Image 1: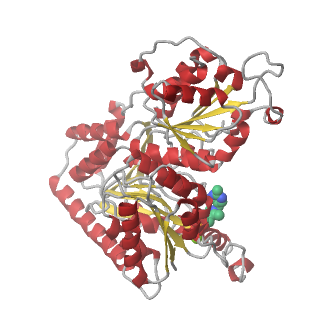
Image 2 (image 1 turned 180 degrees about the vertical axis):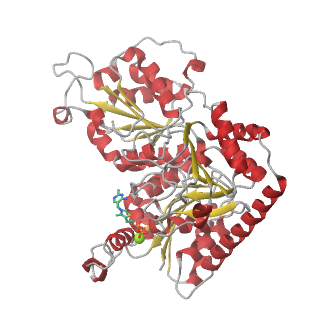
Image 3 (image 1 turned 135 degrees about the horizontal axis):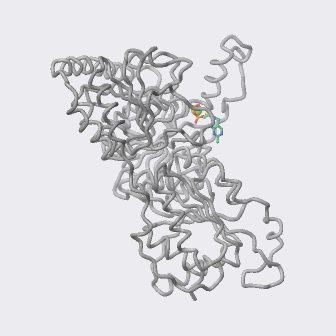
Length: 567
Ligand SMILES: Cc1ncc(C[n+]2csc(CCOP(=O)(O)OP(=O)(O)O)c2C)c(N)n1
Ligand SMILES: [Mg+2]
């Protein structure tokens, strides 16, 4: 039997989707039957990863796509399962991560008119006016597969959107009868379903930006997610070296530039102080960034010329956004950067001036590096800086780190000191709970890599660790999970202090954000997935705990959780 469900599975296989992160329900008999049939008849089918909660399913697909560049599929149950994806939809959208989400819908008939017609009470309860509206504000494309006959084409159209810049999640639904419908098998030529070809700069724009960078006294590049493309990182290094341009990362969610490079001037986050390099710069190229600076506390100097290149320069889904750019261009950074270099031939670039710039940048880089080194020295109490530096030394430069470290976001960015693109990710969004699922997804995409998730204690609970560690054992994706346990939620305290520094809350003994009786974080993972569990409270305990944890991962293929009590 070849049904619309068989066609959907076939489309996923021919599009290179390896995994279906699935949370099944009464809307899925057609798909479950088609999967069983594919297995029984040795037809190719994506591997099903049973996901006990939807948020973890989508976070895993998010991590997989970050590590591989490829969308996977997430299957959820009608409106309820869609809602249970929760903030993971926000994260995939904000992170511009390709993923295909498929949900069933309540059957459209109630008297047995077609196979799949309603036969359970819940199908009246789960019939809602606008199921797709639940995610419409977040997805790149959404549609209902209304007839089975073109289900395969619709899957490919959805994936085309998911992978075309700016990439993002897409959402398809289908009623139960449609998923059950027998359909003819169509012939498709996959070369007709490729994502949009990447775009470059117009020649005029390339010339204008090249001229400004060449003539600048203190040129600066600010980026957050250029590192989605390894190729772009290499091209950024070439441009920066040629001209002697400083680079800062602003809330990076990728490795955008080797942090040990002499032109690297560090990372900024929510610090409430002016970044010196930003204040000094006379020409600034913002390339692939959502928040290049926070103007109320940290901004370019008056008169600085700002250029902006981005896959999504208008920030189409952000109601408020502007950075005072003289020129904004929609382009792929890996295309745009060599165009700027090529355009430089038209301008006189004084080699002496470039040499001076390089020397000044190297001095700035050394000063930044010295600060990082000083902050990670051991102190009496266990600091996040020291812990992260020890993790860095223990896991090496090829380990892939996912970070959801909230008020320690910048600590992980700085002290992991990544050098290679694709070795550090954060969600790109603001809905906590990405970390554990993402680690499982990264490990599926890169089975040979050592995967490390570093998260806050609050974020650990948000990530549904019982689901995460059940999946980690079930699907053999052991990873190191480090909880930066600072006794609860520090971020809301920072927020209230920033708005009411002298307020009553600032002096109140309890503002309901501490976890005075914390759960046994590592024990949750041990109970749910047999993870190796460690708790460290002092500097001396860190190294041996990391060694034991890595041993458990490498030798016993078990995940390991370190509950680290940090300042
Ligand atoms: C889903 C979701 N709920 C609530 C918040 C608001 N929020 C932002 S930071 C934070 C606390 C995070 O705690 P933790 O992970 O321990 O990091 P810390 O602030 O202690 O560094 C909360 C609740 C959020 N961002 N996402
Ligand atoms: Mg915390």
